[in-house]
Image (cartoon, rainbow, N blue to C red):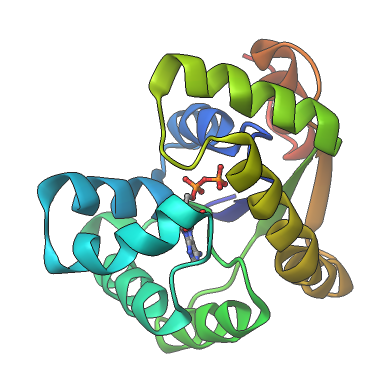
Length: 191
Ligand code: ADP
């Protein structure tokens, strides 16, 4: 288990679980959302370009996102594996990742799907808004992000499901509990 994706709707706990799982497996966690936010904070050209989309809860255009991921996946620290969080989110991004991996002579081992229902997700994200103050955590923007997930990212999961590599995990429950389910789904011994 060295090349993995984690997918799930906003608020499903992808980022939290990604960090834990990557530490456990000894691979780098790469979050496209975190990379974008770091660029916004640093005022880089990429950040300036991405900010308007992120704040509105829209996807950053594939042309921008794909190049960023391609660059990241060429770096030395991902040679032995990675856990990608937040990519691919659209069907064209699946094609792009397929071609990046093929060029690197690599294959995905598994796609971890975290599930939770929309009302739970909205509630969690509104709570997070109160703590972290992310500009995209207002109720309207949260609902828009969820709608985009259903419209554009569910098909991503469907495509990987057809390849037989999806492991579905219930994301409802305590963080530790979900981590235990994820490790179990990946065939890893409990902590
Ligand atoms: P969440 O999954 O909670 O929406 P993320 O941190 O994964 O949070 O992503 C935050 C924002 O970053 C997204 O709403 C989108 O604007 C942008 N983003 C992240 N990953 C991608 C991607 N693969 N394609 C396009 N935009 C992305």
